[in-house]
Length: 222
Image (cartoon, rainbow, N blue to C red; front, top):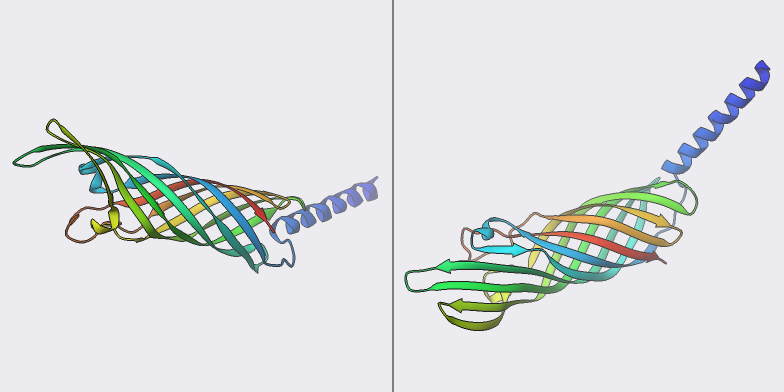
C-alpha cells in the first residue's frame, strides 16, 4: 500500500510539473502573421472639457500584426492598421459680442501602430490566454470637425479640417489588454490611455486633449 501511495504521489507530481511547464513554456514557436478587426470606442480627456463636453464615439480599425517569440511564452507583437474614430461634443461659449452654442463631432481617419509585448499561458494545445501592454502610435491622415453652431438665433452648419485648427496629427497611447486564443482564432479586450496632448499652437494655448480608446478585437492567425 505504501509503495502504491508513493507511486501515485510521484505520478501526480510529474503530471503537475508537466502541466506547469506547458502553461509557461510552449516550446519553440515560429513567428506568425495575424489579421485583426476592432470595434473602437473613443473618449477625449483633458481640460478641453472646460469648453466642450465630449461624448464617447464609435469607430473601427482593421489591420495586421506580426507575432515574434522572445523567450519561452514572452512575445513581441508590432502591428499596423487603419482606423476611423469619432467623438461627439457640444458646448456653450460667450464673448463680449455674442453667445455661441455648438454641437458636432470629430471624425478622424489614419494609421495606428501598436508595439506591444505580452505573455501567453497555454492551457491546452488549442486554447491559451495572453496579456499584453506597450505603446501605440496614432497618425492622423484626415480629420473633420462637423456640426452646427447657433449664434443667438441663427443656426449655421460647418465642416472643416481639424488639422488647420491647432490639432496635432500624431499622438501616443499606452495599451494594455487580455486575449483569448482558440486554435487560430483570437478575441481581445484592450484599452489605450492617451499620453500626449493632441492640441498645439496658439488656437488652443493652455488646453489639453488626450485620446483614450477601448477596443473589442476579433482576429485570425495565419
